[in-house]
Image (cartoon, rainbow, N blue to C red):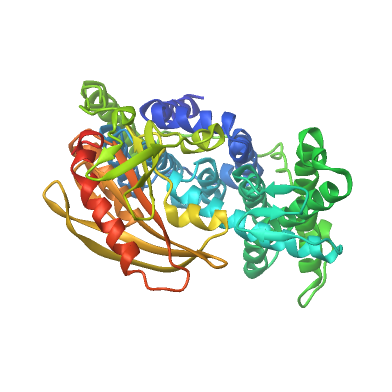
Length: 512
């Protein structure tokens, strides 16, 4: 009992050290439907390890010093995550520490038995926001395209613009809630568990797990098609309320049924065809025989070393001063001037549905026009803190959702414009929908830097959180209608002129 109390105490200590990240992870399970399955994963892991109880009981737990190195790596990441107060870093460091604890406690032979169940912990960690946004946008577009193709099979005339399905009398938007991720994440976890329990060749297990992705996409597309057909036949009420939610449960259960059917088919392939019961069944460990000698375990020496290391890190963490976001001196965008060097602005606003998704701190949306020139749509999304994962949605993910096609993308400097003493470098994007063309300039203005690469933004976010205790930042986007058939010189000239005009006033609202 003493050994298991120490093991449980070490696990509790790992949770306490990573408390902010673990708490945020559990809150995400409770509030985001696509991660709600996370509450069941610890119980599933415990069951899968308990299944191998008879194998573990026969092994001496001699521990491994390599586990100490793994714990040291995890605790190092934990301290960095705490200094930067970035939850995603703390959450992954927690997984590394748990793996290191198992290795120092059981040794290599025991760890080989439990490492795959422990790998399930990866499915409990929410995706970083910028990866989730990109994946969500792609899933919406793909599901919409396949769903529309299925609707047309029923002889229904339908038009697709991005993720908006136009049925003539009704327009259905395949919103972020219908992107299929509510099925994909839990189904991938379910597929991983099924592949682990599936007694078959490794390639069959890999195929079973990887197939959860196309299964989710196809079944979600089928759900969208069913909603489209029902709306066409009986009205918009078919896309709302209980029926909408009920269809979601039915589709997920259908996805699970497809997985079972796939396992049955894979069991029949190969040199020796077997029944599904032979290759997939929940086994329980046999009870030990009456003549089996029971010897008490001792605590491995590497595990004592890990406990001392964790106590030292706990004391160091307690001694660290609390990390509070550095105060910002900035003006609200409500004060942004609407008259700028010959440009006159007309303010606009974002609907509540978009604000709920963007989770921004402040923003401006306005159309600026000058005499004899086409209006420029000006949008800035500002985030006072990006520690919890909230960050600007990249236009590269959002533009296709409105039915626009990105026909070109390049980076260039804007002459006559600078930010924090550096030339203003922007992403120049040409988008098209039918005969309409628009030219878009956008950049990420973050703590005195102008960045055009979405992934580099994340690196600077971590670095500045660590060294400057700041994670504020903004996305700046300019957009103008372009001549459908002419060259883009005039549109480029207007956007460049406007970018140079707003670069200096913007520093009062997006601080360096």
